[in-house]
Amino acid sequence: MAEEKGLTPRAQDFSAWYNEVVLRAELADYSPVRGCMVIRPWGYAIWELMQGALDRMIKETGHQNAYFPLFIPLSFIEREREHVEGFAPELAIVTHAGGKELEEALVVRPTSETIIYAMFAKWVQSYRDLPLLYNQWGNVVRWELRTRLFLRTTEFLWQEGHTAHATEEEAEEETRRMLGVYRTFMEQWLAMPPLTGLKSDSEKFAGAKRTYACEALMQDNRALQAGTSHHLGQNFSRQFDLKFQTQEGREDYAWNTSWGATTRLVGALVMTHGDDAGIVVPPLLAPTQVIIVPIWKTDEQRAAVLGKAQEIAKALGTAARVKVDDRDFLTAGSKFYEWEAKGVPLRLEIGPKDLAKQQVMLVRRIVPDGAARKEALSETLAVQQIPERLSGIQRAMLAEATRRREANSHRGVRTFDQLREIVDGVGGFIYTGWCGSSVCETKVKEETKATIRVIPDAEFRSAEMPATCVVCGEPAATEVVWAKAY
Ligand SMILES: [Zn+2]
Image 1 (cartoon, rainbow, N blue to C red):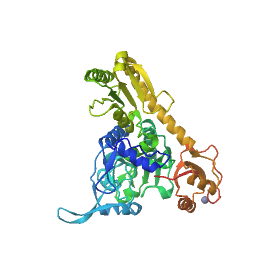
Image 2: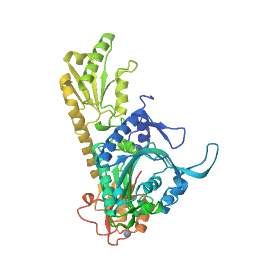
Image 3: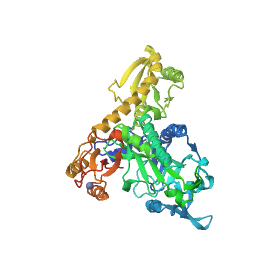
Image 4: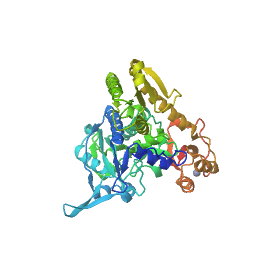
């Protein structure tokens, strides 16, 4: 590890800081293939914890996992007009395989609506076969021109849910339900409170009737789309002949939804909680929650402190994910530095003096609630209190992220000049009125680079609905939230 060279501070260059912390925490590395990334064990372990939690929530809401192929016939992608227009520039297409040219070109999936609904069409005959509630964990490829580790990569990992329903109402309910699942997951596990709402037509998924999204505010006051849920209407089922016989004996097309969350969430975690010493992982997602660092000078001390460290790790058992850093070739200082960069929430230091007093030093990675960073605790007390300390940190991190989001939300913005000043200056979520016209939306996007992140859900809307559109001054059709986004 290129040690002791400090990280670029966030305030100086957030983007440089981001790249440096991702590398230093050993979350990921650049790959020989441009735009792809290698997810290293620490980053992958965080992803696996996210995956485990989200997978349980997806199954608890009645979905089953399945797996569909990586390759999709090019003709499938071309069937839904908006879908192909949206994805064409990013497609990776296989034309040769097995030493010869293929009869039909294959697309490396950018998303799986087409192949999944083509298969659903084979399995659904009657309303009794519905709903189909499927989820798939896998990888997808979108040939991006500008890439960033985790935030935008040519290949990424995700889950994509795909469902088919007998009625529009059911599909809408499902779309909203999964948006809620994402929101809960982000709040409870990532300690990241997203705004939720509807996308404007120009920002919706290619081929969807409606797209709902979770938008989180990063520390540089840019928004990050962290999860989306699409009501697809009957667009895909018409193209793939996904028909069924209704209860009344009529023939109808099924109503589809799809929803996804990706390894981008690891980048979101970094930019929500990281500090100038490295990343900070919410306890629930920390592969190691407690790192025990024994400190010694002599061999005799080494045996004694290591013995105690292992005893404490054992006493904690399954109450926390604990690891003893017993590496001989590193100083205690280097170990502190490494685990801080990796964002481990709690560190226990045990030296000969602590041993004599039957105590340990408990050091917190961050102190969002203003508690002491370092405190001496008796061995027994430390073991007893660690689970509660971890959940306290998890809660405090969500509270701090929520406070920061609200502190950087600007309401009551009435004029385009005010909007521009905030976008060019401090940034954040900007709430304004909007007439609903794409002309006004495009003007803001072209002149400020801010976009409509969402038409916010009721609970996020301002107490007083803005009366006029921030661009044209005509009566507002709705309130919207603008921000520059990743
Ligand atoms: Zn307008």
